Length: 79
Image 1 (cartoon, rainbow, N blue to C red):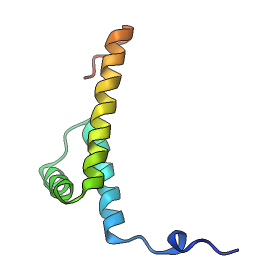
Image 2: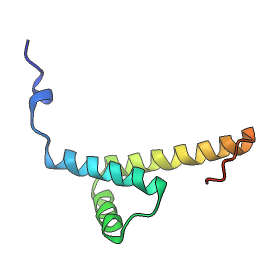
Image 3: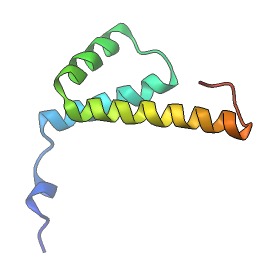
Image 4: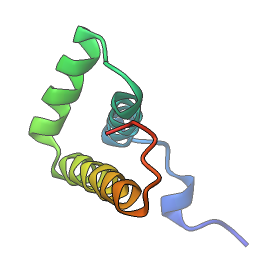
């Protein structure tokens, strides 16, 4: 059996750019990005609706977990 074509194609440039953006978005949750990282991420987000949606989802999850922690009395001191 052979793999479907989408499984065997090489990674495209947009796929790699989105993977890098996803790593930067995750890293930004843990601490500040460098100026170069911030600029690269903002430029990518200006052009990529999928990654912009991912950023919104991360922000929503972080806010929801913060609210849950405050509600449940388990606030760890992180926003």
